[in-house]
Image (tube, rainbow, N blue to C red; front, side, top):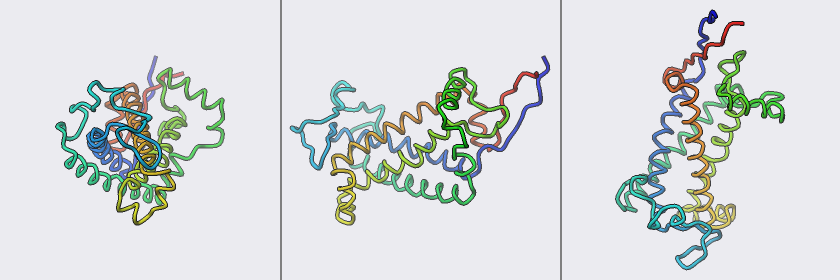
Length: 243
C-alpha cells in the first residue's frame, strides 16, 4: 500500500523549547537536593509544628530501608545539608523566574490560547474517553491536526504550569523564615509551616509523576522524532496508511 508523504509541522516555539530544556536541568537538581534536605528530618506533618515525637503522616522509613533516602537519589550523594540547601535555593530562583518568563511570553505570543486551551467539546466525557482509548492504542496525534496537542496533553500541561509548579514555589517560600516575617499571611494560607512542607512534598510527587509519564509517552511515541522536535521545533507526523 502506497504511503503518503510525511507531514512536517512547526510544533514547538523557541520559548517552549528553551523552557523545556531549562526545566529538565532545574527539576533534576531540585528533586535530588530536595531529597537530601528531606533526609535532615525524614518525616512530614500537618500544622505549624513537627518534631521527632509528633505523629507524622509520612515517614521516609516506610519507603526506604534505614529511614533515609539513599545517596544515589540525592544531590549531593553524601549527607551534606548545607550544600543541598545551596543547590536547592539557587535552582529554586531559576525555576521561579523561568516559569514567570514562560507564562509572560506564552500569553504574549498566544501559545497558551492556541496550544493549551481546550476546544469546544474536548472536555466532554465522550471525547475524554476516546482520547484515553487512542492513547491505550498508542495513537497520540490527530491526523487531521498533526501539530495540535490532544486533550490529555493539554490537561497535563495546565496542571503542571498553573497548579503544581506555582504550588511548589509558594510552599517553598512559605518555609522560609524571612518570608514568614515579610508575608505572614502565607503561613495562614497553607495552614502552617509543616503543612506547607507537606504540600511542597506532594506537589513534588506530582511533578515526578508528570516527568515519568512524559518520558514514557515520549519513548512510546518515538523518542527520536519527539526529542528532535523539542530541539528543532519541527515535528514529523507518523505516516498514516493511504485510504
